[in-house]
Amino acid sequence: MHSFRAAIILALCGLLVGPLTAAQVGQTSKTRTNAPTIADVLEILGAGLSQEVVIVEIKSSASNLDTSPTKLKETKTVNSPEAEILVRAQAPSAASPNSAPRVANAAANTESRRLQNIAPEEMWNRVTQCVFPKYPALAIDSHITGTVDIGLGVSPEGDVGNNSRVLDGPPLLVQSAMDAIRQWKFRPNVVQGEVTWSRVRALVRFNADGTTAVDLAPAILADNFGDPGTPKSAAAAFPRPSSSPACKPVNEPAQAPMFVDGAYIVGIGGIGFPKCVACPDPPYSDQARSAKVSGIVVLHLIVTAEGHASNIQVKRSLGYGLDENAVEAVENWRFNPAVGPEDKPVPVWTDIEVNFRIK
Image (cartoon, rainbow, N blue to C red; front, side):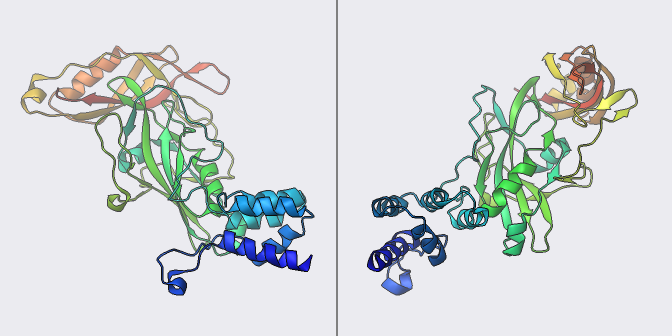
């Protein structure tokens, strides 16, 4: 039996730790550093499994490193959470840059809406609620720091979609980062009256002093509007500007609804977003067409409980007569009103983007 245990240890070390380094064998292969330790191997051998089962698990682990060690320990006992945590910490990350899979349990969203990449500085302007992650105690005790890179998909309703992907990051920090990011809320993306998906990257940072922070960065994939995406090597990160809502800790109670000057603030305290259902494009002014001016006019307004626009203010101007055309057009738009916590229509303050493009 002792000889069998010794053979198993050698086999596990050979299959799970991986090949020797280049300095040892004169090749360029890399040593795997995330394999189970000898202590893990001894615990696996103490699981009371038959020799045949152990051999099969050893063979399967060579091609399935992320599950076999954990499965063996779960077969042994369900009363060893510390052991399970350590194995998960050493297993290859689901956020490995070589594989970049979806977050666990995040099914692809099949809604057939177009998607637009949004510049990080503009995406910060659309944030209505942001949450900082909680630093996992095990990661702090193990002095694990780093950044979790998340490809963020924002739904037409302004929620973080299930199609958001973890692109990279330390495995012990991924779940905490995603738990926080999924609580973020944004103003919906509207392109010429069409409410679309929007995309940006979130860089969730876990710092050596025990604090956490979130920056936004350009999306790396192409969108449906001609943006080819930005390679990581060329992408600059943008921290939260002072004009964006302050981020709260993940365990802080949700904010109560805010009623200001005759309407609620959209996206806060369970207040939903209105949706435009009749949104004709505004006309181009002759002055703007002659000057070849294009861009976005941002209007700040109330969408009433009846679905009409009122109290319209120009928040970002283009000039050349386009601001007036945008206001006149939105005055005639019709909306499905926002819904409050009691599932009743409520008036809300919101921002509307009116896009002017010379065709």
